[in-house]
Image (tube, rainbow, N blue to C red; front, side, top):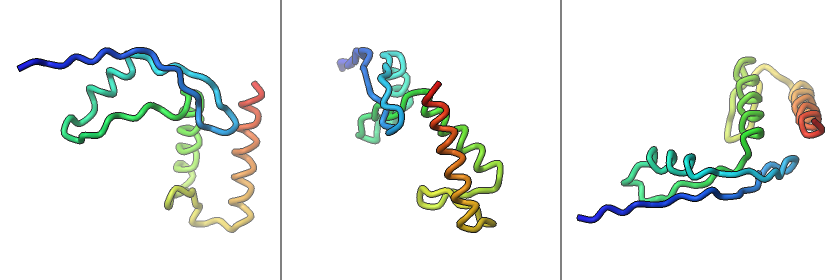
Length: 105
């Protein structure tokens, strides 16, 4: 029985966030880690990341912020069960403004 070894190489990727589009590297070590965590019976190859580390962290912080204030995610859209349309718009504007500040840094 022969065992197949896979060699991983660093891959250059581009962030999918419209206001970022930064180039980032998916290292061979990260690829190997994902391959080890993958279910061998799934039959699906693992997907490379779509967002750079900065954007992943920003989205994680936004998600934690919303959850800490009682928001829920429904079909990919964040909703405040207590809010009116006006307060939803204020949050969207606040998050968009923060993103714009982060991009300018």
